[in-house]
Amino acid sequence: MSTTMTAGHAARAAGQRHYRRFHPIEQVMHVFLMISFIGLALSGIPLLFADQAWAQILVEWMGGFVGAALVHRVSAAIMLFLFVFHILRVFVRAFRSDDPLGMFWGPNSLTPNLKDAQDLWGMFKWFFGKGERPQFDRYTYWEKFDYLAVFWGMFIIGGSGLLLWFPTFFSQFLPGWMFNLATLVHGEEALLAVGFIFTIHFFNGHLRPEKFPMDMVIFTGSVSEHELKEERPLEYERLVARGELGALAMPAPTPQRLTVGRIVGTIAVVLGLITVALIIYSVVVDVLN
Image (cartoon, rainbow, N blue to C red; front, side, top):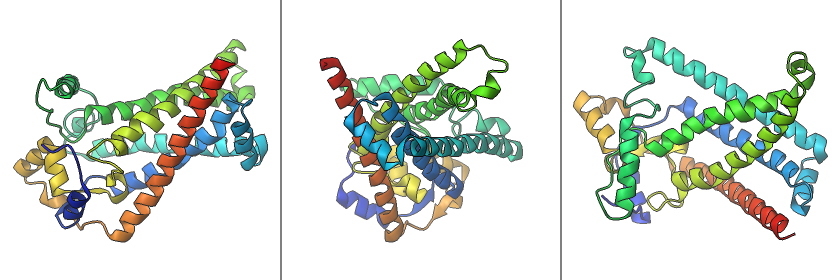
């Protein structure tokens, strides 16, 4: 199996048959998730490094702390809406499906299972030349980890954020020390989330060799037949065996769509990497001082 995707490979893929991987609703949700996450990061991280010149400049660009707070809360509201909408959508689709449990367990589910643990171990063996690369189905173990990380973030970061956003309401039935804890948890967990998304997630999604410089699937909603066979052979074989592959066929993405996707993706990746660089710089400066 090839582990690199050259420019020539990408060009050939454009002329192949393409199959839908993400619904347009999921693509729109991901765009707004990107926007809200970056908004939260750029408006929240400066508070953790308020003594740094770059943090002060960034806050000034957003109209001061009042403007930064507005950006933060609008972004938080968007993310909360997306989270609730996604949960409702999953249950509605499960209710309408002929196989309701398939939404929560099975090859089309993002729930981790024994095969994911086996794939993780298999990847470690493959890294060191001790075995073949695992065969993946619709979702890989790292994609499931990314997905479940959102739930952790929404409950821990989102929950503590709501306490800090509406302190008067929550103070009616919560002790004062909870708000001190929420302040600590919100900042530290947010820093962890930003570091993870802007490094591990970006690497897995865009910067690993077979996808570099960018995986366009979330922007186009489709994958070429070659990519599907190479990267997710178990899904391909299952769809062929069930006679479901043809129903997923769709036109190849247009050059205009690819251009828009590259622009949006590049902006997100650059902003994320700059944020990580500023965080590392600030931490190093604090340690040295």
